[in-house]
Structures are given as structure tokens and as C-alpha cells.
Image (spheres, one colour):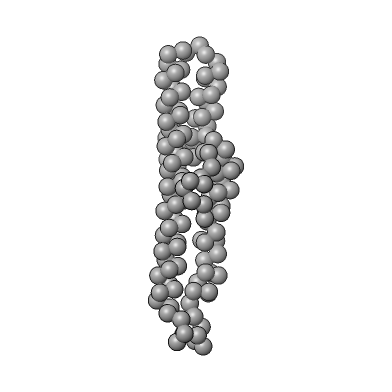
Length: 118
């Protein structure tokens, strides 16, 4: 799982998606994780199933928290960029380059925000 310092720039959406995919591996492999965490009858006395389950739970919780933070960070970055570009556009309404940048960032924002708020 990627640590917060390893998060990619939110500007490169495909890179961000790849990092999220890697962060989802524990969820995607949950059956395998459960099978390797819970002992079979022959190993029940040798392995503390309760401790293993707790470790798995903490791993899942950490993965979910990291993903949530990464997504919210990108949403906030996008929101800030849109607001900054809107302010600049309001000062210079005839700047076509600025208008194109704002539209591009708004399109990215719609992709990133679950509510679709601009």
C-alpha cells in the first residue's frame, strides 16, 4: 500500500488510479487473506485466530483510511485549483487560455468528486 508521501500528483489521473488500485489489493484479495488468517482445525491450537483476525481488521481499516485520505486530498486540490482559476477568470474574462484551463480542471473535478459538485 502506498504511504501518503508516495501519493502521486492528482493531476495525473491515470497514475492516481494505479495507486488506488494498488491500495485496493487487500480488499481484492480478501478471501485469500481470510483463508490465510484463520487456522484450519489441525492448526487451531497453534495459531491465535483472534489475534490474526484483529491484525487483518487493522490492515483493512488502515487501507480504507489511506484510500479515503488520498481521494479527499485530490478532491480538495482540484476544488482549490478550480476556485483559483475562477478568480483569475473573473479578473480577465477574455483570456481564452485561462478559460480552457478552467474547463479542463472542472472536467477533472467532476470525475473526482462523487457529488459532482463544481
